[in-house]
Figure 1 (spheres, one colour):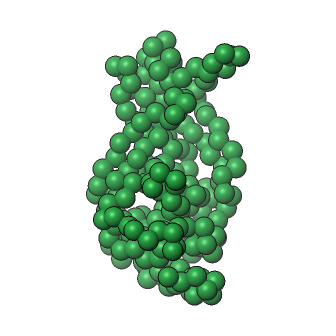
Figure 2 (figure 1 turned 180 degrees about the vertical axis):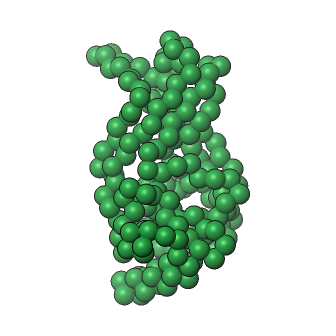
Figure 3 (figure 1 turned 90 degrees about the vertical axis):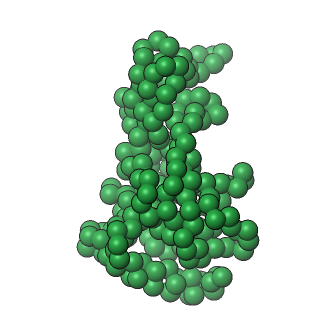
Length: 199
């Protein structure tokens, strides 16, 4: 799923003893902005369905950016209300009404300066907007996008549009335009049934 990660517009230095962190960088140069280029394998609808622990229609209600554990990048935790748990694997037995979904990138204050990281093929999720997401459960109980922006579909009324642009296999297969929500849901149901894993 995830192949490589590259940072564009930001150099974090390495030494034998340690690694420069974003905190070090803002102290040296003030505001920091960088794009994160992440290479994911192209994903078909079948890949999305079979990989996801949870497929759900969600409403993004909040966001909280934070530093990664090594302090070198920004991650954002989105609070998402589960409107419709379309399909879940047996391991996701308990599903709270609001879940946390994490992705690379985000904007926030640090040491009195602004730090802005953005993923090139996966723009930030929008507050107050509905998405259909194909997500994996992480050990801490939160969720993440195994195929980046390919794993998220923005809902606009009765249509959906895959968030990814560059590696959007599903989007290209459907003419590069938004399609009816029911089209995506019918594909998901058919794949789940044929795999014998429909919950």
